[in-house]
Length: 116
Ligand code: FES
Image 1 (cartoon, rainbow, N blue to C red):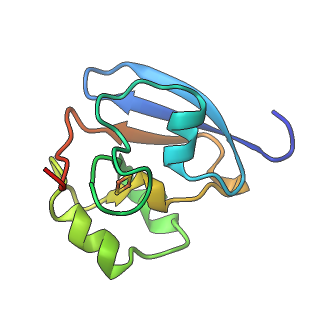
Image 2: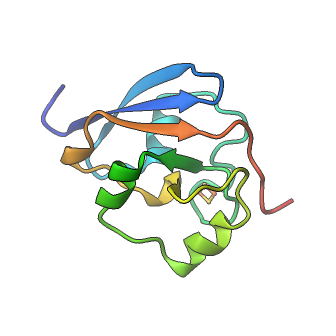
């Protein structure tokens, strides 16, 4: 890994694991898009906080370490997400930092596009 690179593993509902690299400052949505990872419907609003399809589920310790608390707009969108959990966030709102290297996040089985 280069200095600015962070490795993230996405775990699909069927158990499939996809490890991808992003750069510090990229959002988790950027990592999915830039690595051409095909999650059906994921990131439909391209990070404009209007769809909830970029919903990801964190392990509790990772969730607690996230630097930024969700904004009201993110919380409103999360309410509409499929399979919401206590450790859910929207991937387009989470930016990579160096200490997130090795992070694992779960990708819910499907998406709810809040726009439809
Ligand atoms: Fe639509 Fe994150 S990509 S809310």
